[in-house]
Image (cartoon, one colour):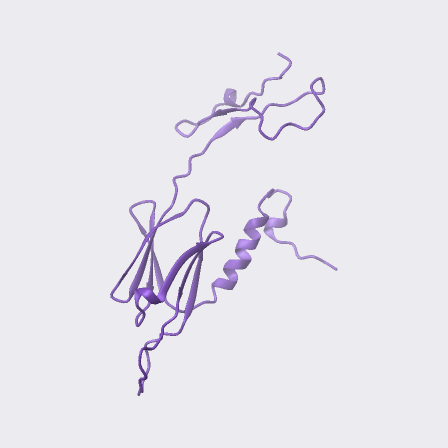
Length: 173
């Protein structure tokens, strides 16, 4: 049996197997067409998702987060029997899902004039470089502790790193 090769199966991508699951989940979600929505960037790191949910009340819509997914679902209940000659406003139940990157926070949701607005904030990502200690055979052959205090971290976000920033010192000194 031959296994198909994907980008994330490459030995160069260590620890990215969860991205493959996200891509698979996103491809299934992309086929959803109702309700229509917009995504806007606001104020630099802000995002606004607007869903057109005409015919629904705020009480008939639920917004929640589960496993890095923003889930919006609605179920309309008819209060009275109506006889429609034409029904063009869809009020069928729906479930719209958005996959959120790590650190994205939902700030608030508002409902006005048949539009549900959800405001999100993206975190500012700070880049860090750190020096990794290279062990030699004269030291213990035991595997390193996961939380090792001998790792020195430096913040290079405001300047470009120089060659001397990455010099590794031997523990024999």
